[in-house]
Length: 540
Image 1: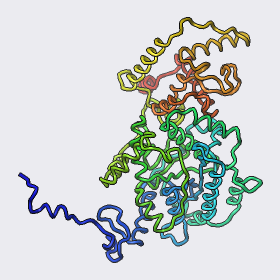
Image 2: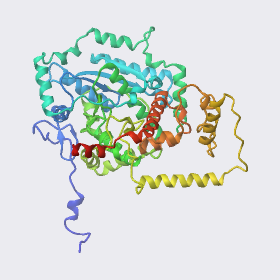
Image 3: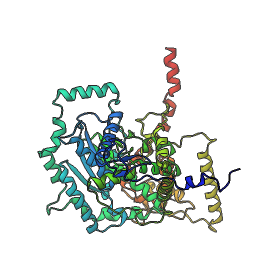
Image 4: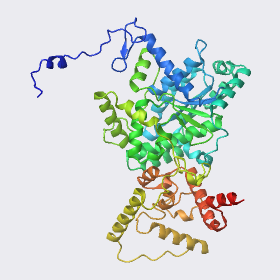
């Protein structure tokens, strides 16, 4: 049996810990200034080469960004996005060994209105980032979150990609790039040209202040009502991420960018993977955490920082003075149990402190995930996409499934609540006041509100009256809206007290999809199924 007083017990207690006085593991000459993992000690020069090489290797291995393409960098001012911007600057500099071949642009989404910041605080944050963007020489775009209320319906339409990014097409693009002048495209962003001046001029008002810091009063109030209608912090963070992606996607399409870079690190993606599973986004994990996200079709989201841990990024920014700024968010100064995302972050970071391979293990798991493509629905069909996140709908399942059981439990629980709080006598239907059409509208109002106690159309119109008599674009009731959403977005909408506070482009797209579904049902008898069409081709 093992005894406590064995002779090797002292050796186990006096285990040597790594120190910074050791030599660099790469050059074997310089003194190590940091230790990334156990046994991975680097000097200052070798760590910079290691950091830069990892960024270039990630882009070169995937070959998603073609030479000469316009790439939009989403910079929030944090450590990861600022480090990503520094790597792009390093790759486009004249002294770079292997220069990057794309044309970059910058975008910053001002989210101060969602987190309750004042205009002065938002002004200071935008000013700091604007000074940082001006030093890079890249065209930049500063947009406020309030601009989601002015987005067109086309944001929610997934445009089919022209061609696939294969090895042969990439080689063809490189050869064409070299024939057209090579590095002149990459160096063009370093020179002061008219396009940069026009981009900067568009972001300023007449008094010299950034236009995003002074959003219209009606849009600010609409944003406050939107996030006030969300009951949980978990749903607020999920909704904020969705609206942020819509803004970035619209800016990329409007400005002619075909790729968008996000500065999500390995640690952040590990947290996102576990929290997404908890939120019911298991079917979209490959797109939410992978290197390339092509759900939008014409604009592809890439994550070149996904191989870096938060520790590596923090050390690089500190050693080489990479400027960054902190902007408070929805989860700033909240407890560990305030939301699912915050709880998952606390769990992963605390586990990583005791077990250093936690983040890398979760990250390697996300690398093996792939999106399951169904042969029954087309990627270009809007009905097969979620209304908010534009991922494939995961609700079209068989009756003998966990999702169907969940829906049955919800219907039974709602029936029990309605039976327990039934009124003593039904209220008479209101008399029609707008002619024959108003009679049908009043009937739909009473039926949609039945027993919920929320009033007309699940909470009333914007003015407190009947939403059916309103001429403005409105969202359908919750039951109709949920049929257009994936499981995770259904949970987000479920935590909202009223869906009327959502931006109007979401309501317009929901109405359009609802009409298309109704039209498809009407002509379904005259449509050929894909299986029957395939059988006819075989017979021919």
